[in-house]
Image (cartoon, rainbow, N blue to C red; front, side, top):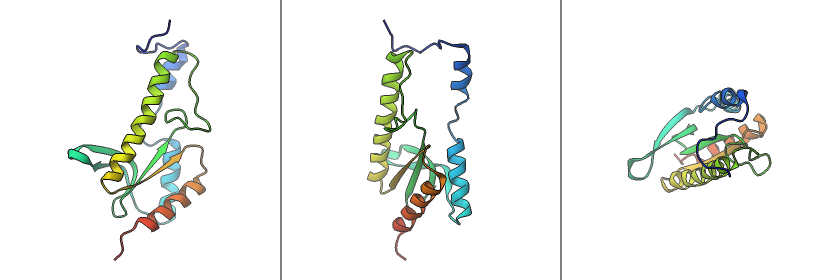
Length: 146
């Protein structure tokens, strides 16, 4: 019987791999930020945005003037419909954990939109060029009129 308690690893290297996952400055995020900067866009990284009742949300890449929040989501952690997988071990833990991540992402998007922000989610598997173009298009369409 599987439990939803902490999933002790089934193989020795698993702990090292999981501890090696970064919260910020992931390779896809760094690649996107570098491309955005090369294209002339300026932004805030790991930016804190105040939303409802003074609570805050940390945004991977933020364009405060355009009120655009960009998140670079990993396929595994955020349930990519194309590449997301659920581990075969410790399913009692991982199923709810990954579903909770997706639910939190939806709630985060909703809270940001309620605060007047546009939200763009980029999957880690998207090409840097496509992701950069999507962000550029959104920044242009989100900028307030002068």
